[in-house]
Length: 186
Image (tube, rainbow, N blue to C red; front, side, top):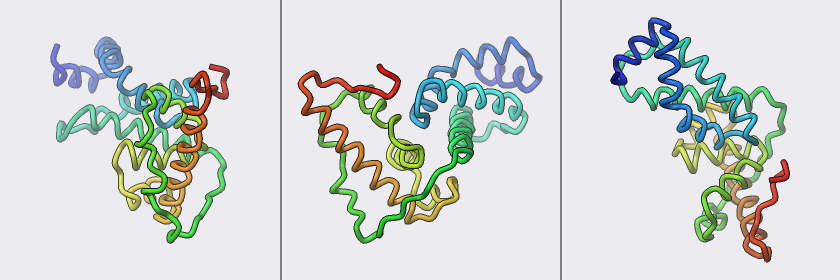
């Protein structure tokens, strides 16, 4: 069965088609959820909430643009909604002190899975801005609208995230075992 047929059946609330769609996209959407979550359990919750919304909203998908892109947008919005429900404090840094070149993490050679663990350990506000800006290529203007923060706060949170990551990576590279210790013991 091709994707268009699967979508049509899902729009009719066909449980078998929904199950097929879930199997087809669960891994890629779960990876996306992991980027925005602080742990695997939160990622799994976000994935489930995303699929519930996807299935409830299927009739809204008009076939314009990528279906996978449409699902990813829903998933990112669910992660942002989860973040917004948490209480947090915005940290604002003078924009003149923000020099992105000073906080680049690309100079280190660390496996992607270890980088993702470090990103997951960032405070929520930093993790979200980092992921939206660096990994999903949203602008600070777009991020400020999505998270209901100022562009300056978005830039500040990105700067802080990069500083924290750079420090953690340096610590990791300096350790004799070169292993990451996570908050959940892994």
